[in-house]
Amino acid sequence: MKKVILNKCYGLFRVSPRGYSLYAEKIGKTLYYYRGNHNAENALTYTKESLNEFIKDEPTLLYFYSFVDLGDKIIRSSFDNKREGCLILDEKHRFDPVLIEVIEELGDEASSIFSKLQIVEIPEDVIEDYMIDDYDGFEMLHKRVIEY
Image (cartoon, rainbow, N blue to C red):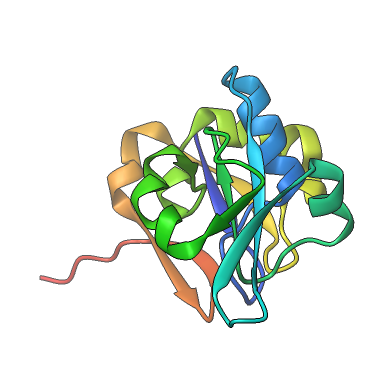
């Protein structure tokens, strides 16, 4: 059986800060956490925070995770060229065995405030016969029906 990750609530396919942390640990990399805010001049600034700060007050809009320590503060314009170190766990990772392990270990704690990530199993020999459909982020797995 092939495991696949689906989001089973209205919202987005998003992994929690704790899920990102465990993912980075499993692949042997250090992860840095950045939260964005607009400063007094209305410039977008990202500030490095600890994992505990991210868990306590999970960011909802302006944030990113990086394998590269970009310093304590980043002004958006200086950040634009440094995205190559970012970790983005999204729909493209739904078959990722490491992310599947993370969700199996953390359960509901692997999901962000916008998601409810669950693992579903599909017979390996017919995986191409299935498709993922979503309604406002709530994902469903369907067997393809071919009409002749």
